[in-house]
Image (cartoon, rainbow, N blue to C red; front, side, top):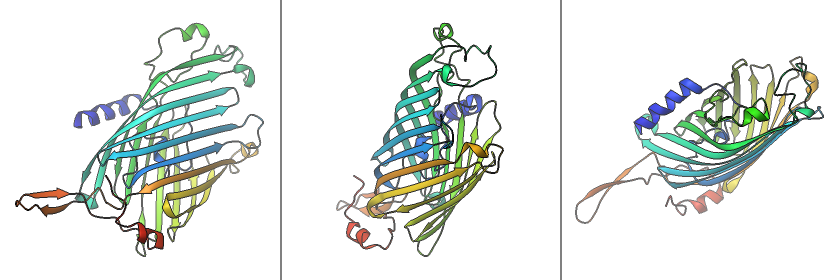
Amino acid sequence: MKYFAIVFFLLTSLVGFSQTRQFYNQYMLNPGFLNPANMDVFTKYGTTFLSHYDYANQDNSANNFAVVSHYNYRPHLGFSGFAVNDNFGGYNQMEVAGNVSYKTFTRSNGGMSFSYGLRLGFTQNTLNASNLYYRELDDPTLTQPGINKMGLNLGFGFAMVTPDFDLNVSLPGLLGNRLPASEIAKSKPSLFDLSSNNLFVSTGYKFRWDNGFYVFYPTISVRSIVGAPLNVSADMNFLLNQLIWLGAGYRTDNSIVASAGVFLDLGWRFVYTYNNAALTKHFNTGPNHELSIGYARTIPDNPFNYRKFTKKNGETKKKKTVKINLPKIKIFKKMKGRLKYD
């Protein structure tokens, strides 16, 4: 796997520029949307649906619908499916992809996993320039009646996770993201056009108290986009009594973020996020809304730890059997010991 890591970081340093992809305010709760390597090691399987609605006061407001589902087939191997439709006025991007993640575990530093992910999918980009307003009338991209480009796409990701710390680095869509300037240009090979990618980096740390019933989770996300300033989002998140989620954040584009949600028994999660550009000159564009609904099956067995046991013939082996301490809720007491990481 060291060769995979070397190739990944070379790609990151060479082509980590930008692409036309939605940034999600709930990146800390749903890293799998942007990072094919991140499939929650503490759950057997899960699904999240997310809707993002931008510029509510505008006629041609942007809307994004995405879904991701993961299944950890083995502690070291996980699979997930991803689909998104992103529409903004005259531009639409649709993508359907599959992800595979390989994970390694260590007992050092309180237990840590390293995940390497690969995304392979189909992407379609459509531009209807007649719906756009622009000043440069001689721009060849904007003077075309319509451009439709489709093809395979490839993405990479890396994740480092402990029970309290997480780091995500990803290039979710490497190939052929740039729209051609005309129908004539579309016929030219552009599959390996790496100039329109972007790089996502996010990290956070969970501070726990009262047996983990209360969590303070500060996070930060960095998005690199070619031709635009570096976009940074800093957020403070709280999970109260393992039930109520509250969050607030600030972005370097001078917008503010607030979120609230509930984490229910048996893995259900509902979170709403509000984003407003009231502090900028674009205050009249209206707020942004984001809603996610998620479900995941918790694994009581902690994949970071090992226990030695001796067979009848005297042979000694290691087995991952240490359990995660679940919240002290009645339903979890009934579940404990019955869910296995098969």
